[in-house]
Image 1: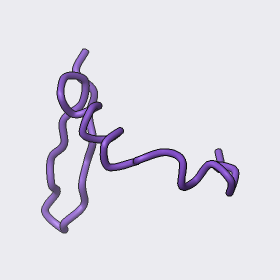
Image 2: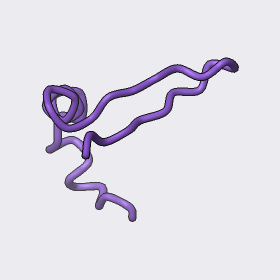
Image 3: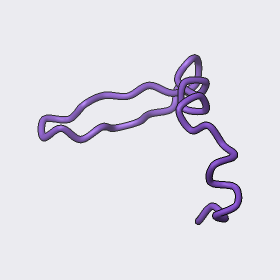
Length: 41
């Protein structure tokens, strides 16, 4: 899903990601440098 151009600068993605990782998500780095994101269930 693409974000309309007029909304791309409206959302602060860094703060949004920070909020997600507070409780709901966590990440792990793979052997080749990939980042995997998981959701707590």
